[in-house]
Picture 1: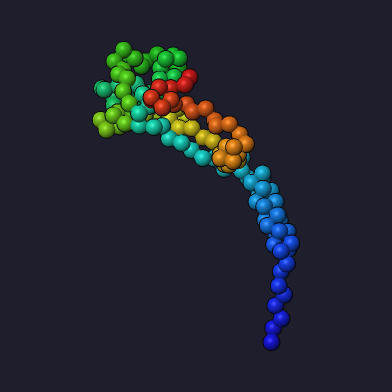
Picture 2 (picture 1 turned 180 degrees about the vertical axis):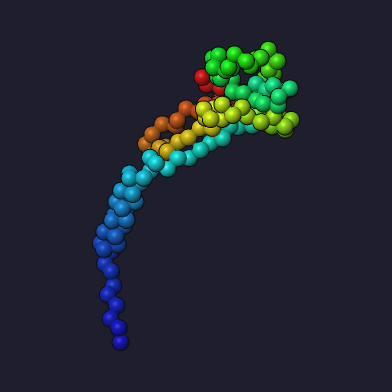
Length: 132
């Protein structure tokens, strides 16, 4: 015959509090190191070069960050979904400079979902325009 001790309701409260404190502690240690990446939406406008089949981010072109060898007169503004369907690929420099993705931390996302932090402003508007 084995003896099984029954837990009191207060023991369940203590266990729950201990688990919550443990989860909060672990998130405080690693939550800022865990990154959540958002890719560019299909309706975001990019500048596409029809000849080379490369598309560029508008901030890269409009702020004159491109090399002097790039001819911007032939670039056409179109949604990135259309550019991809035409076989265009992103410019490696724009990709390296993270123009086509956004990152947020796990801690910020959790705090935003709980209503304790504001939403991080997006690089892209709902209509496909860029915030730069």
